[in-house]
Image (cartoon, rainbow, N blue to C red; front, side, top):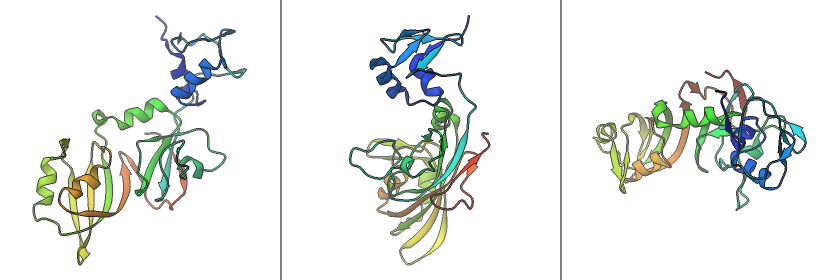
Length: 230
């Protein structure tokens, strides 16, 4: 039996747009399958089906490509922002193909952000079941409890949310300021900031330095570099 998949998924895999935007294109009558205008996204297509978007034929899924991006603070990781704030994608080179991010970094966080043309690969990289470690350098302000490393190593519940164990190394600081190196597997929304706040510690700077096998290295802030997909 030949493999089939939803039309919106096929359009997204071809790098045309996101699945949600693909459904909008279908509703607008801009997608044809085997010469017929598609009226609903509830359609399965196979390798032999001819799909056209705005009159152009799309092809099978392209090879997975991956880029490292050194995200600066002040940018949000979204394609569109209703508040008009600058986004990561607006800052990318004009010759970049359409890409999506692997996970996010919030407005005030910086460092390594993975970009890819492959939505399925991105989701796989984000899943906790992939057990991919994310490592951050974290500058904090406040008194660090003597048992902080031990407590976070066991996992911690904050405001009813359970956070998995994480590895923490404490670097020397000056006064009430210190640098930590924190390695997570889950990467829940604002996880590090919420964990630190539960100890009465404020995060002053948050830099992701690695994600799975990918490392920020010496990539300059605001720069993007294509790397081999591993």
